[in-house]
Each structure stands twice: as C-alpha cells, then as structure tokens.
Amino acid sequence: MNTPDNLKYTKEHEWCKIDDNIAVVGITDFAQGELGDIVFVEFPNLNDEIKQNDTVGTIEAVKTVADLYSPLSGTIIEINESLESEPNLINDSPYDNGWIFKIKINSKDELNNLLDSNSYKKII
Image (cartoon, rainbow, N blue to C red):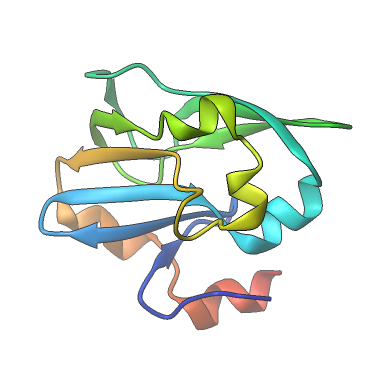
C-alpha cells in the first residue's frame, strides 16, 4: 500500500499535497484499490467555495459510486481534465497523474485536522 509521507490524508481516503496556499487533491491508493476500475469522475465546479469535509463530487467505479470529499476549505481553482477521457488514471497513478482537483486554501489551520502517513496507515 502506497502512502507517501509528504501528503496529508483524510479518514474518507482523500489525500492532499500542499504548495503554499494551493492543495492538490485526489483519492488514496487504498481507496482506488477498494473501488476497483474507475469509469467516471463527477468534479466540483470551478470557482466553487467549499468547506472542509463537504461532498464535492463522486467517483464511479464498475460496481459502486463513492462520494468525494474536500480535505480543506477554499475555492476550486482547477480540475484534472485528463480524467474526463481517462478516469483510469486514478487507478494507474493515484498520487501523480490521477489527481482530481486543486483548491486555493482559506486557512492552513485546517491542516491540523488531517492525518499524516503513519496515522492514515493505522486506519486502513
């Protein structure tokens, strides 16, 4: 199970990578493995203001649909348009090419509510 140390995690199996006040968000290797072959992603809307833990979209796999939650509050500034034609990138590369959206963060204080790699490994 791949859980990079440089990321933050949620109990709902999202990850985020922070660069200044921008967070890149996706689902974890564990989550994509549990879902199976991903066939569709419903993205949040660009410029939406979202709160930490809001449902912002869905991920549809062959046998199930899972909600996608935001790990942080902020504004949606980008979506990974590659996933529209290749949602399987999430299965193939959950931490690189399979990222889902980017948020301009409102408050870095919310990072304290997220898990580090070791804490996330304990819940999976």
